[in-house]
Length: 63
Image 1 (cartoon, rainbow, N blue to C red):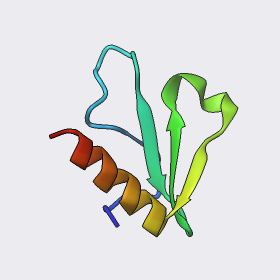
Image 2: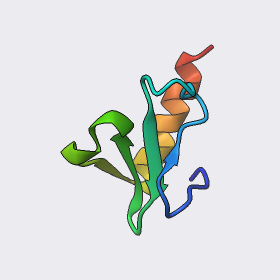
Image 3: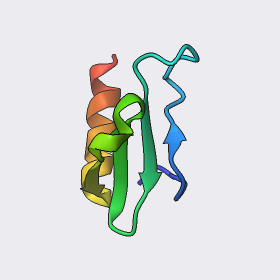
Image 4: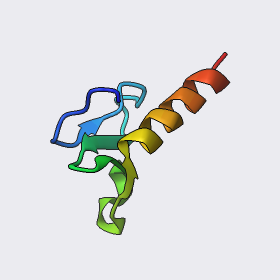
């Protein structure tokens, strides 16, 4: 699984202008992700295997 911090970290792909940003953090079960503009809505959690699969799928579609 990609190394994540237990603290929320903004994606390095997010611009510095406060636009479309997501944050992710490590959880005991895997990872969590949330929208920085809508933190009050909560977050989505994924197991380590699900998080790895998501990242691999995103990387694969970037080609």
